[in-house]
Length: 103
Image (cartoon, rainbow, N blue to C red; front, side, top):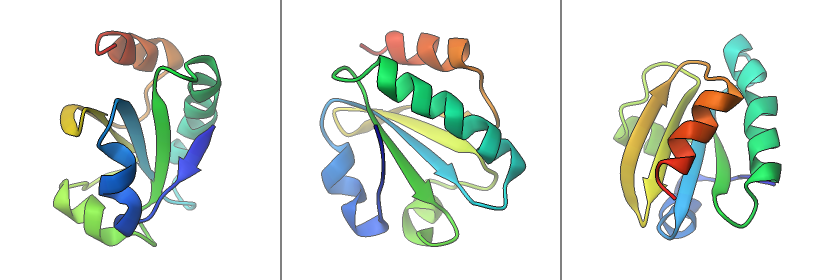
């Protein structure tokens, strides 16, 4: 399951384990393409990786802190540290490879 989080929840929710955060907006076409890929991976990797979404139109603080200039952008955090930053659409195989590399 992919959980939507706010700026206020970000640090609490993403500081343990392996986490993928998808920064998106409703008007973004590539974001709408990315969403089902993230949803599918969240189902398949349940218990191994936590998946979150942040709407950059509503939650601007964290996106600004991470220098998110274009969307979709995904960050991968391991034990609270950013280990990958992926900009643009990525297919399932690519995302899975990135995440497996950090398990």
